[in-house]
Length: 267
Image 1 (tube, rainbow, N blue to C red):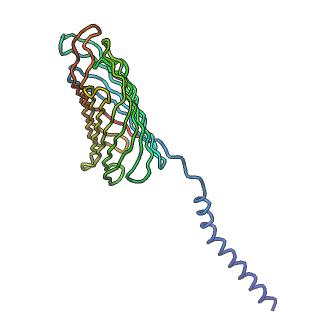
Image 2 (tube, one colour; image 1 turned 120 degrees about the horizontal axis):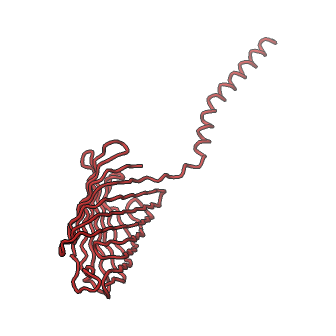
Image 3 (cartoon, one colour; image 1 turned 180 degrees about the vertical axis):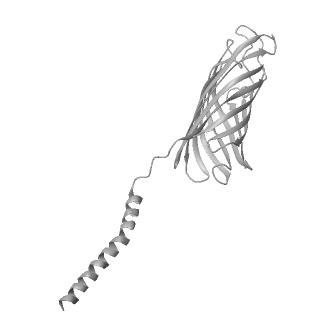
């Protein structure tokens, strides 16, 4: 009788221990699920390369560019910076002068669904080649993801309104006013390569002859998981360019083209 009771007690303890062993992973999993998820990390790239320019100048420039992006649904934040420097031969006078360009960009998006979003973007910079001492662009409006197959294959369309200010060389040649904005971004995979095409069109409300169009075409080839090789073509058409000299009556070319080859580090 006593031995039977001991057997039943031992069997009961063994059963309890067995249940605890099976329950421990479940409790651990529940605790892990209840933990606060880690903050989304920043991802981006830094590139160093060279640029061949045509338009107002024929030059070779060194270019450094960086972008960083953070996605924490339904928000997206993207920051960017570009700096270029070189010496060029002016198309008119044939003399060598220094030229440089710097830009800082900010972009914010709030997604209402997989397809509909609102955005705010801005740009601050200068461009000695185009005679722009300071440029500010700020826009906001709705956007539509018309097609997508993941983060690297999509078509985004944006429209909106904004403000454009350009302080230029020459008197009475500044641009200062509101504008409409139309933009698109197309990204796709071509085998191992990544293709991206962006376009932007700004149309002033007060003087439509001062419109500005910008486009960038980029093809990137991965070398490793952290390094890639990129070819990019930048085109800018300014229908009302700056003056060619501070006291002159002539104007710079409307068309500017840059072909950039760079080595890119991804993080």
